[in-house]
Length: 216
Image 1 (cartoon, one colour):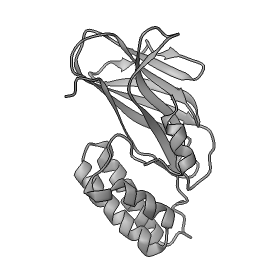
Image 2 (cartoon, helix red, strand yellow; image 1 turned 135 degrees about the horizontal axis):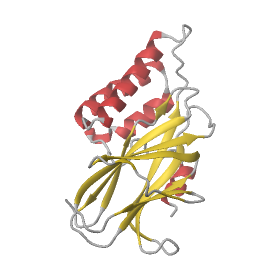
Image 3 (cartoon, helix red, strand yellow; image 1 turned 45 degrees about the vertical axis):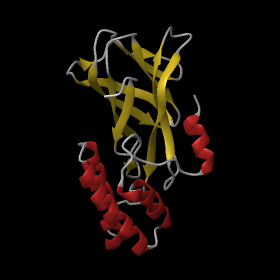
Image 4 (cartoon, one colour; image 1 turned 180 degrees about the vertical axis):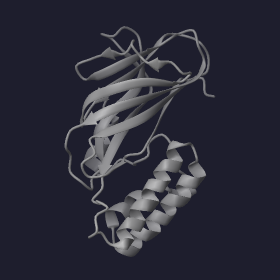
C-alpha cells in the first residue's frame, strides 16, 4: 500500500443503446490515518449523481453525501486506514454512439470545501454506447464481438484482471476480423503489452478528450 492516498475506479463502460444509467465502484486506499479526505465527483455528460452506496465496510446509503452544483462530495473520516469502497450511480444525458464519452471526473481532496486541495490523480468515468442492439438483423460476428467485450467487463468488475484481459484480447481479434477499426484500436490499447490499466477501463479517446481528462 502506498503512502499517498489512492483512488481506483471499477466499472463497465459499455452501454446498450437506450441505457441512461451507469454505476461505478470507487475504491479508496489510505495507508495511515491523517487529515480528513473527501471523494469529489464532478459531472460531465452525467446529469446527476443518482445514488451513493458504501459497499465496504457495509454502511447502507450515505446520508452524509454533500450535493454540489457540479456533482457531489463524500466525506471520509480521518481516523481510519485501509480500503473502502463505494458504488456511485449516475444518470446520463443522451450522447452519440460509438464514441468514448466522459461521464464525470473523480478525485480525492483535502481542506475546506471552498478551498479544496487535490490529493493524487483525477480519474475519469467514461461511457461508450455501442451500436449493438441484439436484434434479429445483427450479424453473428457482431454479437460475438459484443459478447466478448461484455464478458471482459464482467470479469474486470469482479476483480479478475487476467480473465478480463483474455476476453478483451479475443474481442480485439474479432474486431479486426469484422473490420471494426474503432473497437479494434480501443481494445488493443486496453491490453497493450499484455497489461491492463485498472485505473481506467477506457483509454482516453481522441486528442481533444485527453486534455479534458486532465482538467482539474
